[in-house]
Length: 373
Ligand code: FAD
Ligand code: UDP
Image (tube, rainbow, N blue to C red):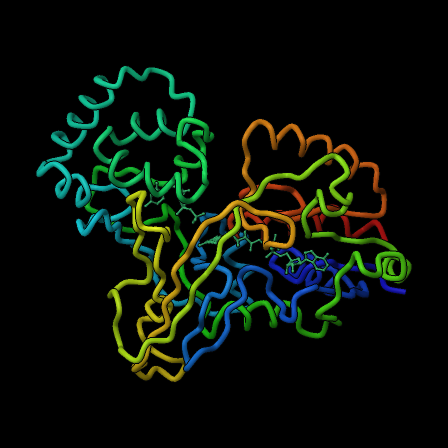
């Protein structure tokens, strides 16, 4: 008999399991995938740590989370500065003075602010009600048309005026020359890869891979006093109220026999016609070097294609619009009645959580929970 069965070895499950172990509890972690680490899993290809389920850059302002996670990995000084490619025109991201200078030829912050104000006024937006209006009121119509509209519609498969405004608020807008994508005090990539970091979190904890909870739910439940479930909340209830919508992502990954494909970790293709959203060149997360510090002669790139999730696909991004939020609330009400089970993480809580927020949520849950068994 274990104190806890943790379903899912992603960051939420791994952090909860670590905390439980440190509190003296017995823990069994299962995952249906053949590997640990959930979506932050990295795989070694010719010395390059390939982010198999999408590029992950750790960033946080939360010192508690930073102090915690740096116990399990040393982080490098990587700073995310994606480049936007709009039909061959290159722009700096996030939106900052370099972007405004390239777009409009403006030199000073006053000129840039005036240009945004002029475009916002012409569009007549006072209270932004959706992503399109929010974007225009933040950066004006030119940037919206070239750098946001096509990318967002590809990413979410929905027109920008049917998407919630908060999605775009993730992106900083700055009147300074600063290409650092994140407004975070702490940022970097775990040296040696994310998989190693999660393996450190799970050190000394029993993990069974290739085990789908729903294939043997009764037997597994019988093994533990409490269950921490980090899979999709609607799957837990066999989708009986209907499917929550997700965006899925397909990655086309290639090993190239050249040292440098695009000169940057991320290039976003922001036009509507290019079928992929972005290309990731994994080696640049670690400055083109292998673990021993040698220059890598080859490179691995991944093209990302966004698609609507359908049963059998990997769910990636919860689509947090009104319809799904309402359905989620109904599932949440059912979840609250499952006394033995805690629902956590990006899928269990149907939340667009970053890694630091997932770690924080797992730490808080552990604090609340671990006295109970
Ligand atoms: P997951 O990592 O999804 O783990 C859930 C685990 O549960 C999986 O391993 C799954 O196999 C397992 N599971 C599910 N169902 C079952 C079952 N029935 N039986 C057994 N096991 C099951 N965050 C950042 O901070 N920075 C970034 O740059 C960033 N980039 C991202 C890019 C992409 C493309 C995506 C999709 C997300 C990104 N994120 C980023 C968010 C980050 O991935 C998540 O916050 C984090 O990985 C969520 O961890 P989790 O444990 O909740 O979920
Ligand atoms: N976005 C955009 N153009 C870009 C990059 C992002 O319009 O070049 C928008 C898009 O709507 C996206 C949102 O900003 O969904 C958040 O982007 P971010 O890169 O933070 O999303 P992630 O994929 O990392 O979750």
